[in-house]
Amino acid sequence: MFSATALANPEVSGLIPYEPGKPIEDVARELGLDPASIIKLASNENPLGPSPKALEAIRETLPKLHLYPDGAGYHLRTGIAEAFGLELRNVVLGNGSNEIIELAYHVFTRPGVHEVVASRNSFAVYALMAELFGVRCRKVDEIGFHHDLDAIRAAITPQTRLVFIASPNNPTGTRIPNEALDRFLDALPEHVVAVIDEAYYEFLENPPDTLRPVRNGAKVILMRTFSKIQGLAGLRIGYALTTPEIAGLLERARQPFNTNMLAQVAALASLRDGEHQRRTKEITDAGRIVFQEAFTRLGLEFVASEANFVLVKVGDAAAVFKGLMAKGIIVRSMVSYQLPEWIRVSIGTEEQNARFLAELPGVLPAGVAKPPLESAPLAEAEAPAQVPTQAETPMEPSSSFESVPSSEPAPAPTPEIASA
Image 1 (tube, one colour):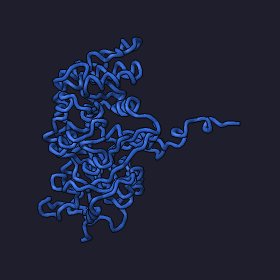
Image 2 (cartoon, rainbow, N blue to C red):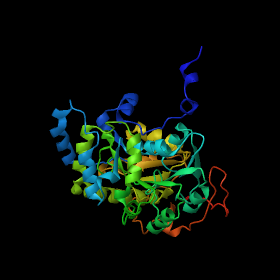
Image 3 (spheres, rainbow, N blue to C red):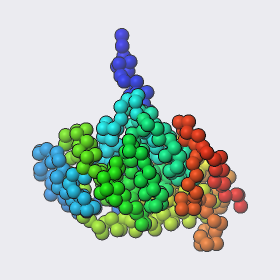
Image 4 (cartoon, rainbow, N blue to C red):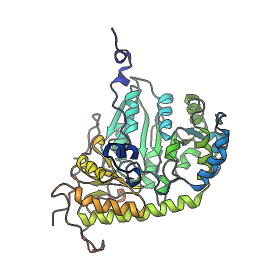
């Protein structure tokens, strides 16, 4: 007798599901904690919450919930197009930007035929979706946690259809220099569609003009989201900016009514709330400095971030994750990303950041960190063992997962700070 698993597609039955950040309610239930006492710094959410204008739009819309949402998302798509100087036909809505990834696979890949390329330490869903669709994913090693654009180009084959690039990248927080990204996009072969994940682009200083290739008709899909700086992660609303031709193809693949009514009205209100976005970026910029200075004083290696989180090396990610969780602080262990010594911590409010930093030294494994320098300013503290910015890193090819040879020896790993 056949089991359901035996009847299932092998791509599905063998898939290891994506592991999200642990919810507050689960931690409270498992550890017997008061949910109000728990802080979540795991999923790069907005510590200020949603835009007040979004909440007002939701309240006004609640009496209409017996109606189906606008299947075309006309008002939100029009608002997005106007905000970026594009046309309605350049915008595709998704149930989170994750759905845009899925739509791109539906449109441009065929099982057992096509390939995609992504950096090894990039958003896990790129590779998970490849496995689900029966498509080979060539994973390319980074240089010091930065995209190796030369190696990504070298990994492209005649079967490649999608190349995923994130800037800032999750989970590393690193960005691609504007000029390097321009050169990369201009040099892509005609048979490849570049998917540029810009979930965190609002946090960048001097962001790239990625709308230029869209306006010029290049095969580019920009993925953006309302989950981060707009604070609407719970409503699952994202969008793609692309050429009318590609947008039309993505529209054919999406499900009817894929974005709900509350998400649409809240997203449009958030898009127009510049003050909430400004305050979010301000608290993020300040918190990032606090984290990175504290990690320096503790002697912890970290990756200099351009996003609303920092990747930091703590020796035993699983143990530190559990230790912090026992104290009511949820961070993200990077074990599932094959980085067992690292955690990713989201930037919270000033109070949340202070609580995390106060508890962190007590859960670190022995010998990992130096005693904290309580009042030493950064200039007097030892220089941080941080991965250099890509502007300081040469664009050298490195080896990739699927037998793309390196033309030069792999760079030595970033040294840890020596013990005091």
